[in-house]
Length: 434
Ligand SMILES: Cc1ncc(COP(=O)(O)O)c(C=O)c1O
Image (cartoon, rainbow, N blue to C red; front, side, top):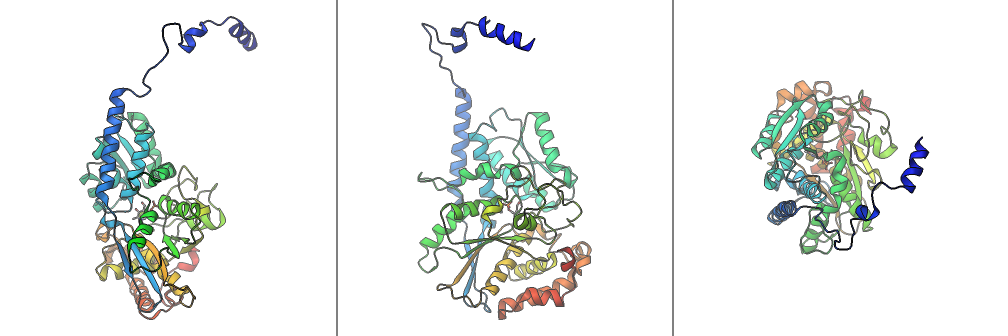
């Protein structure tokens, strides 16, 4: 029957070919694929984003030169200096630019939806309000109130769901309401090309490009290319973006993933594990806010649940969560207003500096990492002793934090091995989780 219909359709076309091609003797087809009104809306939205980029300027680099490691500089690229106060400001700028350019977000989009642990949500709320599109953040029901407030302060709406349902619900709600699920985890890769502007006269938002430009312009900075770039992964977007840049231009910088204790990313990067199996039984809350993988019930699927590109990462390292919290308390105690993922980034950088303390690098060992978000988002959690005792009780709570803090300070002042000392001296269950 099917082949009979095919023969009939081939030899006796029901529509005249001139009608199909729309070419006839007095009319050549010419219509707007994007209506004039829509193109006008798009241009206006894109211009707003570029003027936002110009007003961002460059975030500062803060230099640490630990007394005990005299040949090393650790630079924190301070992303807390952006308008939405996190590393997500520049990423979301590129993500929204992608979504508008490719017609995913138009003047008809009812709202943009995303699953977020807060920081992306705040930047998305900001960028969406800039272009006049409503925004809904689908968040865990126990998200820090500080982060909920941030999202709302930039005009975003909040939808609270159980943590493992966030992606699913964001996708469903967008479909139901004619909105767009922007999926920061799956689409970071698509935003990638919007991070770099080639030779166009506007500078885009690639963080490593900006760091190199800052080093180049600083007459006192001798090493113009960092030896290491250290960063933790949430979506994996930032480290992959930097890694791609480094690999693409054949740069010598080594990219190091800083991972939290119970996260699956370390094994994913080093052993390609958890790509077809969930790590649901391994993840132990609270983890380190905004980073790591495991709270999602789905495996690590590149381009869907993660944007972390294994091939552009050279090394991975884990730290006990309680050690990270100790570093957080120490850095905040020194007046540095940074959050827990920054503390993890700093600890892994400090350990790299310790490992390389005798290396014969001609210039100073130069490590760059990121200050991801501010400490004041965590006053009621990671920086609150009662919360730490309750949430990290198994790792010794504040008693263990105090012990780790001492060995970390020792490492900064005397160049000692804080990891070796902490693992033997400080109470915790680090070994058993690895
Ligand atoms: C506080 C914080 N640190 C680090 C990261 C990791 O960045 P990325 O998602 O680019 O991997 C995130 C991501 O949301 C974050 O919120």
